[in-house]
Length: 549
Image 1: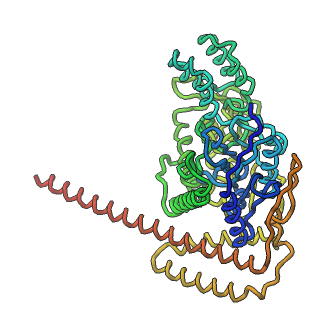
Image 2: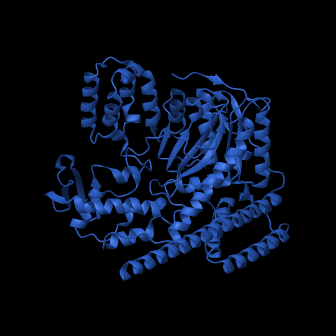
């Protein structure tokens, strides 16, 4: 059971605060808040840059709250909110320094984060198993489905049952198999009981407590909720995938910001690379299905590959009709020679809709092989629109923000800073994609950007500032109240006009960097093509020599 804990980091906290203040001056959409403390060095600190806040509007349906610093004994109590983007990559939603661990301080952190994200609540959230965090999530996000990270539970189980792991080497394998491979609740319950009896641990308190919390961590209980995993057992890893390799146990408070920026730049570059690969290369189709071609044009590359795997598997998973009431047909879908692992699919012909007992679509947002097998039997040649989540498509970050899971999104005014930022960003992405297609076009694009920057700067004193410009920054300019008699201090802007210009200038600088990345990627692809041509030429010559011999 967790207890209240307080940390002190000395003068290093001032270094963090100076950075946050500077970032907010440079970009008014940068948000940070400090939990009330007289000297501003002992309270928890939260921050989220404009990109993190914007990414949340696209991918905020499922969230991971990473507190690896607690289990791995980090020198700096650094926590993060992350999600999954349209390429299946980790994406950042905000960071925190947790100097005070208590129920009220975690509640403050979740309330502050939610406020920075415009009070848009996620469908699900994954955390480490901890009473303080669980209480805070239940209090601030009561409608979100809470999941405990299975990797943390497996790790703690190994520590708690070290004597059993040492005397029974097969226990760990069977324990994980019981948890990960159960396809029904009854199957899990039966396997769990059998495991306890076989290893004589019926009265073990730790295992009993984990069983009592099974609905928060055992996959079979969670697959009816969207978590963005490509399979119900995929996320059997730690939570710190975004900062892994950048922030670790030996990272000091003085090093933190530099490592934070490196991680952000790293994943930004990987997203650009994935965007480039999706846009400029074509996947190899494995079937003549129109549905496969449709999916190749809709999804990002990684998501398409997962869809393609499911589609190809329909060849080995035939659908057999077992009931038909006219409006609803029921099918049994099983792999050849594995009939005992069959799944049931209900097909509603009028709505062109199907439900599968595996619930892969509900859990991952990607349609399963079982439903695809029924579609094949019913001659459904293209994917119905309800089975294409925009968050997994090439256009996930283009156009209006949409949420396939909820209908209570806040509507941004066309005059708001959020809306203008969104429009400018999307137009900039299109500009970068076009500008990186050749060296000549790249040079033209760079000249145009420099000209645009001059025009924006020259007009900085001519454009009126609307009252809505503070909307996206409301978290900075309002006090946030939380339990424990704490108050939030969010630094306020000084000159709104200058901030607006700084924001646009920052965006132009980001575009410049993206152009450089695209140019580097393009040159890399060209080099790879030349190398492949050279290798192919050598092979042809060798083949000709062999024929002559």
